[in-house]
Image (tube, rainbow, N blue to C red; front, top):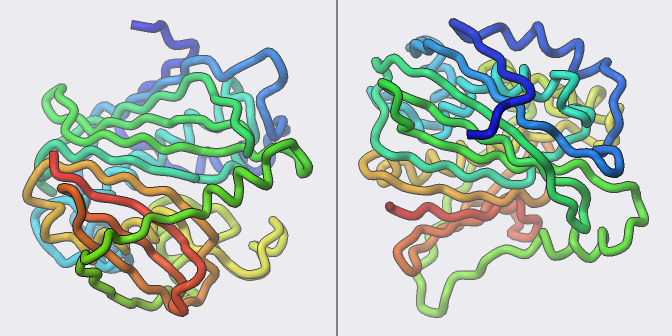
Length: 298
């Protein structure tokens, strides 16, 4: 096993608020300096007990029905304090504010009880140079009795400066979405993303990035309006597919596309192909894609 340069341990989940001063005010470069990379940083929360009140708030915000099993993306919220602890540590060489969540993959090994007692482990190491910028993979496991029962990979992008060779071409390619095969039956479900959803999801998830909170704060970071969290868009989409994603082990993979400005009407298209269910979330008019993904039974 690779020895970690940084290893953080918490008996219980720490408050996310302790990490935000560093997230907002720490002076760091927007990209990893030439010739360097991120060392291995890892962390663990030894005991996580689910708050039914918090779980119910998450279900309400994301559109999941009540029940005794955890929604498939809920452990991401449980891990948020650990994510912030690692990415605000001085050994994580780039500025947290400005990182873009570009992809997410979750493996669900079995249904998870809301009454379970869990531990959480996270780690990040190294980076990839791409045409769009530098990518980092943040790995998370939810563990029960020492065994991983849920696993996630978050891919984060630190954009290159404007004008970098290939960046515009790569950005255009990133907006491509899958199309249903000929003859596939496509189902559609529309829903409303209200103006308040950035604030509400931020409160329940601990992701308090100001681009989600209000138009005023979003404009300070270059957005014309407040933007929905990518993980809310993902969770809200999965809520539409929930019955088939709680019974059996599965893998969910999502690529995030264009920002979802608030408020908006959106439309989820989904269809079956080759043993998986594919889906695309678009603006209500059917043009702007916000995310594309698939759910595959394991």
